[in-house]
Image (cartoon, rainbow, N blue to C red; front, side):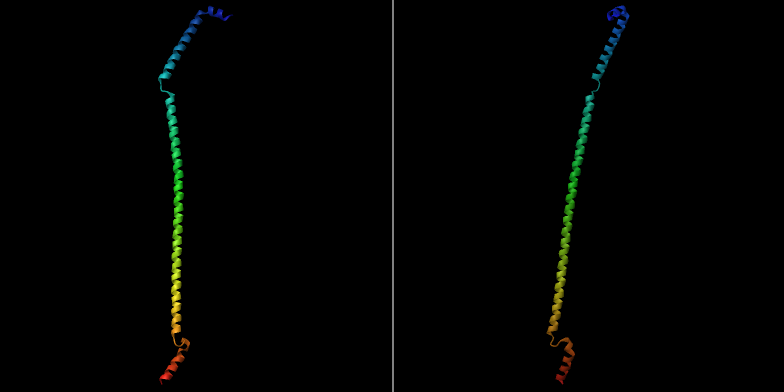
Length: 139
């Protein structure tokens, strides 16, 4: 059978097809109107983009803060090492000054002892003999 012949033979089927196509057309127009009048998906996508951008900005700020905090920490550690080295050097300088002072005092004591021994007329080992001789002279 030829398609033209089948169409002529069934006018009832043609009316059903026309009705189905008309219903589909009305349904399509209703769906289209609802889709265009409702909220746009684009607005949701913009919010998502802004959230992602804000997340990236916050992440970058955190990384930059961490890097700068690390630099500050390293700088502070370096300053503390320098201060400790200066304190150690000052302590060593004071210890050297104390040792030099003790050496001077010991030297002065030794010179005073030598002066007292040199200033005697008779050495201390010969002093009893000198006293006997002094007694003999007075008699």
